[in-house]
Image 1 (cartoon, rainbow over the protein chains, first blue to last red):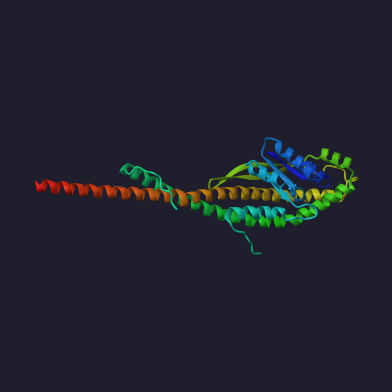
Image 2: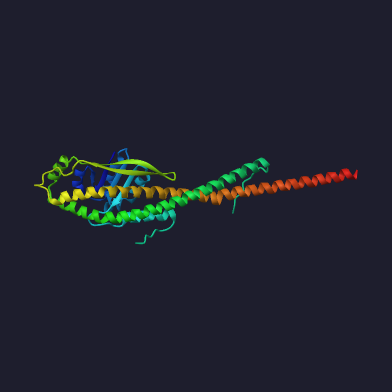
Length: 106
Length: 208
């Protein structure tokens, strides 16, 4: 059993402690970087959610962490909506691996 | 251009190289089949990831707005006290599933206890709604995380397999084929030369 971790500004995630989710409050890129390091430093498989607006400056760190088999950093939208970073990250991965972009017809 | 290695032109070497070439061709076919299978799987996962992320996006925005409202309307101390009172636990169980030799983590969401164990007098209604809604979204969020990791792992193994397939297809197999061809030609040449020598010896013997 492993805890679910979330990195976002405190005003968004403070109540989530009541659900048993581990909070790592961060207001800017520097504090998000520190929070991400702290969340991933524990030597156990980690599932970390981070909001896209904070993750935009941490692409390198997130990519490095996602290379590890037991760490999964997932980007999620915040109250202002998605920035498209998560989708573009997946699109780039697919493009690099199969050499083509995937378009899904609705 | 195919690089030809210096090889001993013997029948033993020819047999060995032929065996290696057959094995390389078999491996190449297997890897190509694996690559096709993984690409098919990846496309399916990407499709379901898109559907899931579109479904979750709206719900998450609304939940975060409610969480923002509840944080704004409640003092930090009250939120802290409420979190101490809560008996709810959310966690994930991680197991490994094997897709065509690629190991992908599988998450199983577990939750227990009631998150709403605080008094309603000092907390806004948005807090209860946000907590219940976030708890409802969590299984989908965990599933999204699983899809995310699966895409990353499969994509990197596709890149690795592609390199192997290309190395076999464009380097090893042509090299082995060229070496086999070279040995066959040399052996044939040696045989012809032997035949000529024998014919000459025969003529010399007949002349006597």
